[in-house]
Length: 111
Image (cartoon, rainbow, N blue to C red; front, side, top):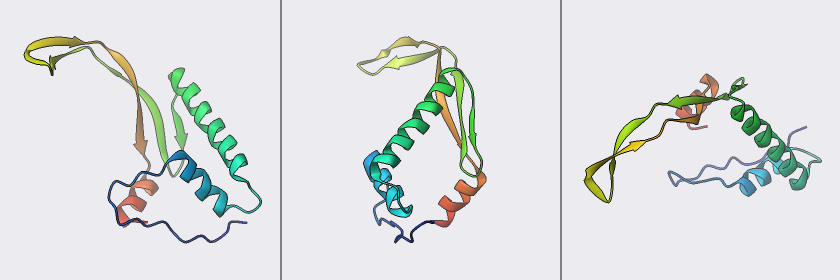
């Protein structure tokens, strides 16, 4: 059974929740689960998502969003040290995240 914990509503825009803070918040919300157990679970989840993305698989978490991989084509960029010089930026695969509707609605509502 989950514990009721006061919501963390920061007045600072752009506040970052670190991994250790996330682990502490989850451990505080769930009875009989230690921070160590939460950290191990979080590591396993992140490792599993990373491995799936490395295989170019998508990971869909209903109500949260979808992690995926997209291909960026080769393109021409500008050398920041010498703006008149053009450079080629190699094609590559990059991870992407698309937020699900419930997550978008929660963010819009400020929950």
